[in-house]
Image 1 (tube, rainbow, N blue to C red):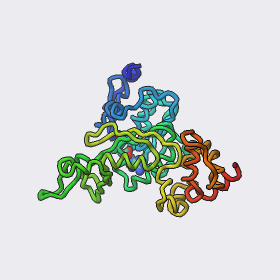
Image 2: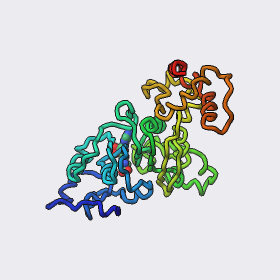
Image 3: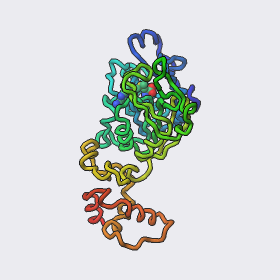
Image 4: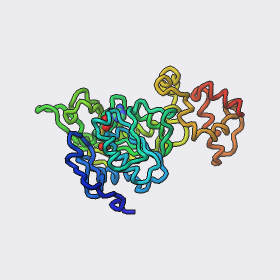
Length: 332
Ligand SMILES: C[S@@+](CC[C@H](N)C(=O)[O-])C[C@H]1O[C@@H](n2cnc3c(N)ncnc32)[C@H](O)[C@@H]1O
């Protein structure tokens, strides 16, 4: 169905200027047929650049940093079964509740909170996570990305400022922006995060990091997504799919994985294996005998079982934790 066909007409007597007086809005969204919210971030362009499916029927969606919720309401309009709009700012400031009532939304709800507090035990998991215009505002970006992985069971769509074409450098006249391509093209393929200590980026103190597109890709890959860069124009859009199994950084023999109990559990509040309980359930039962006897013969390669036997060797109690191994031994 064409998008324009789905926009309801404005209610009788709807006065856009009065409705939005004293409300700051980021997004420009066709709220009613021919009536747009007064923000600058055009949602039609954003949805196109994200390649957000026209049909979201049956999907459970999380919109992180939703502000007034226009992207969330757009997902509801595209058929989403349920939309959670996560936003630290109160609805009185963002106008979320008034817009929700005006458009007659019934499947979108606002949760006051931030990306660091995402908890699958409270919110459940989501088919689609939207993460637009938020990454560079975070002082702890990897914590946010790892948290997104915890609640995502399908697709993540990301839009963010990227620094490829705008690295901030000191020059005679103060700070200026340079394109990596013009000074060091090789660095375009290096995952770099420029740190903004003060208000270097756009005079805005809420901007903390400017990642290159490569850095965004690698960060989400490390957190357990298979990523694709969609478009890069100073900002950039990305699509990711959850990879089955533990996030990559928990497979590696690095300190975050080795010292999960002391470093990460207090933050994430869960066993390592709970990161991917849904995807791991069948493979872990296959892996159980290998875990209890690492020397056991493995089936010939190239079968799905063989792949999981190989994974089992890599997993091990060192990575999974004692509790998981005990459970597996009982199950095996
Ligand atoms: C530039 S606006 C982007 C709004 C909207 N997602 C869009 O793309 O138009 C940044 C949003 O991120 C929210 N935000 C800032 N820090 C956040 C955090 N730690 N967790 C979740 N949202 C956050 C802000 O309140 C604001 O709504």
